[in-house]
Amino acid sequence: MAATHGSAEVVAEVASRVRDVDAMEWGRTALWRAVFANRPDNARALLAAGADPERPMMAGWSPARLSLAGQHPLVTGELSGSEQAVVEESRRLTTALGKPWVEGVSLVCVAGIDAAEAVRRLDAEVVPADSVTPDDMAGWPPSADTELTMWATDVPGGCAIVQPWSYIASMPGISTRLSPGTKCFGMYFNPKGGCQGSTSLDGVLTGSDISPALDPSDDDSAEDILTAYLYQNDVLAYCCAWAGLHPRDARAFAGPPDMWLRVPDGDYRYRP
Image 1: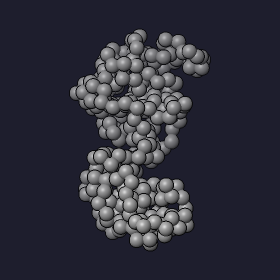
Image 2: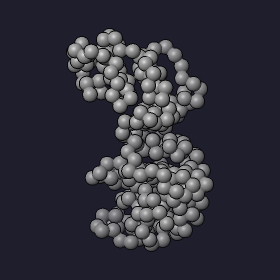
Image 3: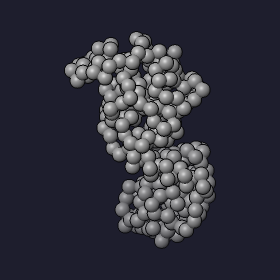
Image 4: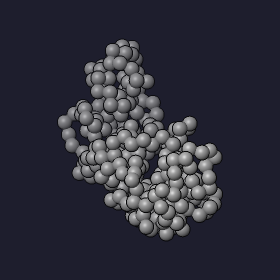
C-alpha cells in the first residue's frame, strides 16, 4: 500500500522494518506495485532498500521489464518489437482521444465492420441527426425513441456505436448482434456505479462487469498485464485498444458522428 499510495519517505521507513523487502502478495512485490503505479520515487526507495528489479513474476513482467514500458525505466533494455508497438500505440491513442466527456455515456467498440454493417446487424433505422433534441434527452424516464437512439462512426479498425445519455449501447443484446465473426467491447460509464464493461466474441458474451481500472490478476496473460498497465488511467482508450480500433481523434465518441440510428424496440439487457 505504501509503494502504491505513500511517499518515498514512508516507503523507505517501512522497507527498513520488514524482513523481506521482496515479499510477494497476490503475485507481485512492493517494487512491482510502485512501477505499475508509476511512482518512480517509491521505486528508487525500494531499490535502495535492496529490492530485486529482476525477480520473475506476473507472466514474465518483472519490475524491471515492466518499467521499460513506462516513462521511468529501472534498467537499460528493450521490449520485443511487438510489445514496443503496443506501447507506442497506447501513447498515440491516449493523445489522439484526449479527455472527451464520457459520464453517463455507453458505447460499444466493434472490430472489423463499418457503421453501415453495424446498422444492418442491429436491424436499425438510420434517422436524422435532429431526431433527438436536448429536451428529449433531459426528460426522465426517456421516451422509447430516445432510449433506442444512438450514433455510429467509422474508425480505422472498425466502428464505434455510442449513446450519450443512457446505457443501451453497452448492453449484451447489442454486442451479441454486432460480434458474429468478430469481437467487441461494450462500456457504460455509469455515473453512480463506475465503469461497467463487457466483451463479446463471435456472437457470444464472454465477459461482464469488467472494470479496466482494476489491478491485473497474477494469472492474467502477459498481453493482458501490459494492456492493464498502459491503459489503467484511460478507460476509453482501453476499450478501443481491446477491440483493435485506432481512432485518429475523439470524434467517434464526442461527435459529430457519421450517422444516427434507432434500434427496434426490445429488451437489450440480455443476449437475443
